[in-house]
Length: 392
Image (tube, rainbow, N blue to C red; front, side):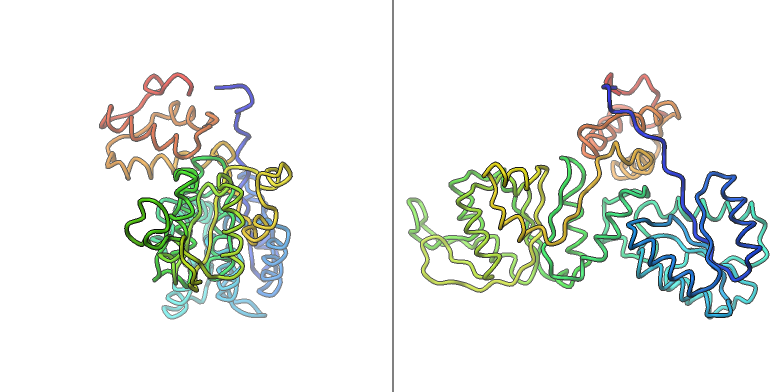
């Protein structure tokens, strides 16, 4: 492994206990701290909700919440609702000595992972907590799993992405996805679209780096017949195709400067004018752009329009490289093995540890290529350290 790519130790799981019984909160906190958790206690519904809001304001989050059902100032369902609003996706366990079928159904409908009867042995609670966190690895309980197809992970870094994604999806704001190649920017764009009010409309993707400069304007805005040599038929542009939906502009940092000005006008006025045409056509779209470059730095060098950057960067979303969420590697590997129909294939512990230590310069895409290759070559059985390529 190259120098400087070592992965830092996994961040301890953070747990919030909400219960009006102070002694119970204290004893649970002591036990879970000894087990390596970071803990915080809240002594009632209102205090619990306040703690959740404080954590969000500080850009922190819990990995799991354990709440009592009946408390003097309210019930645990209010905590479940608050978690779903503030941190969509984190598991909630509800403890109760008063559980009924109705409250259990309502708690599960709101997204609680399970109802647990009090008193519960603390070792059993620990087992339930760890299971809830593990089972929430492929995005979160209570959310539409189909919307998150391919987005896998339970690390704080990737779950922060999920949280922002869920919050921004219902709006019409422009989103700028930034991250290294292979971090899953297109998957995030797809998830935002699926969770948006435009989900019934089209999602139209354009790779600005893959289309020759002389063809990109026509590709985006269309052209009329005779607009240029060889334009024997009119062509509908991608923006028009995205009407009532979302347009995803991948590799936006590669767009030529001249075309950036035309794109800015479309974003500002919400009209397009096909090449060779003289009539502006209104379009209704949302734009999501993605780049692996520092657009502000490019703007300082005169290679990217600063006004276009501001127009695109209404909601910035930075995708972490895989080396910064090494704890997600095992669940990613399992997901990729399932995707490759290689359910009989597994990794020996030393091999999995090597995958977690590796720096992954190609990020999830590189891991996917490796898993697919091993699935073809190995087929079934256990992958050992010797089966991995030399860099790992």
